[in-house]
Image (cartoon, rainbow, N blue to C red; front, side, top):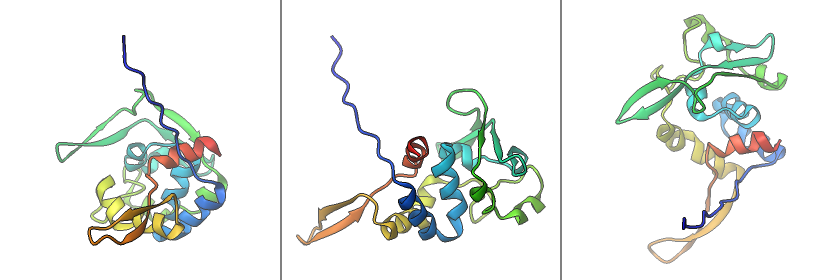
Length: 167
């Protein structure tokens, strides 16, 4: 007999909380809105090229994803093995910095600071955690080593996918 599978309730945020989080993300506002409204996975957005973005038709054609394996980026098909087209809300399309297109259709839409693929660990460390804290999402109290209680805010980038499904 197989052990019972524990179901974990998926977390998501409201539209108002998404606006607060996107505002707190500063220069990364378009990325937060894209993840929170279109339901793409982080790897799909990290591999998104300008050729896959059709702002006139308000669509993204996602055919590839990137994953970090043993410290190296591996580009492949999305998790389900198939590409897909998703619509982009007009207000999100208006946020894109079109100067990135100057690098060509094969350029990444959301490159890291060095021009390569974003790493989830760097995103969390450099700006995501601060944005989540500023938006005060899912607070919990933790006790520090010195015995003091402190409030920690916790919301994962992947949970924006759940937010998109909920919205």
